[in-house]
Length: 554
Image (cartoon, rainbow, N blue to C red; front, side, top):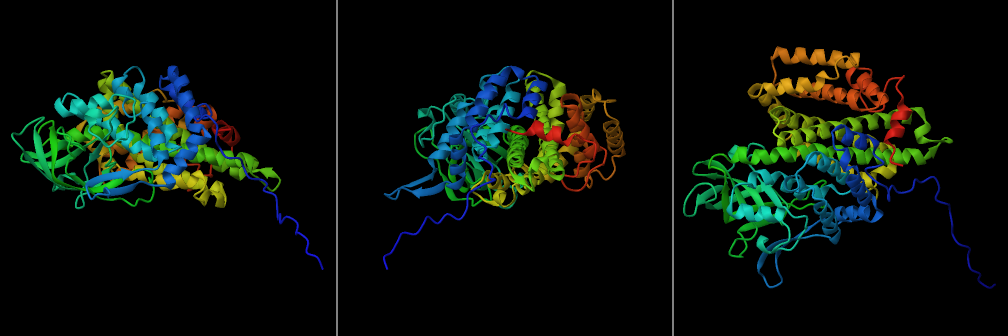
């Protein structure tokens, strides 16, 4: 009997799958961010932010972010001839993303292109960038934070700053004098100390004389040394006069490699596209920044800016996850209705939208304070001192719960690494750990309350304009004032106090700047107590559908 071809083995059609969220504008489709930028006085930058949002939302940019995460960097200790090179090799997608973020000036523009709202505009762009490829934000934020520490130091520091001030990304492993642009990192933590940097054991010995700008030889190690491939790092080491801060370049002025040996790259849970390393200094050359014994104040100013970026980055990661959840719920059907039309799902995505808008608005308000401080406002300086650790603590603590809930909206597809939620999920714990854990941040808030009591007055003044606008906000503020007045067992209850402060501040900002539906739902749930223990437990009576529609990216 003759053989015949079998028919095509088609078992099913692919139906009811949402399209990929791509080729969209991350700025113009984020109404909460657009409104927050305007509320913080930076509306004149909407065209610039819209242009960057469009570039970030292109399918090819999103794919580059995925590839950079999928193919992490590799350490090349020696070249093929046996020469020690300590180089880090990256997938081309990493360089594509770095060229994008440096080209936008997120590493340095507020310093070299100052103007009204410069830090606020950068903050909005930073929130958007986090949604596409957050690993590239590590070298970006460290460079941004390094500028105040390097300015006025002369010598090598000025040479590095001249290249930091460009918008050119130059990945070549060559002396900084020959490069079109430069990036700067930091090295603080050691195996035995972690956040307790005073226990550092790395030693710095003067070469020919001590003092600001002098050359020292460093011997020791760093347990976390981010971005070892970039041009220079701010490093803490024990000098004769105490713990001090040094500028340690990758290449020396005589065009030889500095003696910074990369031991290995960290195998991190997330942040896979970015190289974090362990290094040893074998008589590495460093130049003193500031005075001996003043290393912590010198590098803490850098940390103030990087803590701001931790909050911004977490707000961005949360927004990215919420956007994916809303996009999915708006396209996926179950039980004859779109998910977003089902009351319980509407409650979930609306609650997520509230959490995201409150985080973005709070982080942008902090960024505006940096602008005001740069303009000479002492009150803004006090606000920055108190609220930077508080905002970092709160936004970075709240965002992971939102990302996990958003992943659940997508179901099994959300838990597959081919989609964007896997990247966001693995990245989201990092900002709470980096630049000081939650406990460190809350203790820093207590120090600000004790050593700079005027900062509390500035914080309360910020809320004053919202008094009388919502009874639940007023009640929460009275409760907070009572807690602050007690001043008993403050360290034990530091987390609760900081959470209370940030919820009241978020409520005040939303009452003043957000639509009534969003502010009402926030005050009813987060301040009024009509809320469960998980997201998706908003009370009846709130306009959940309006809140969800406001946050939809498409």
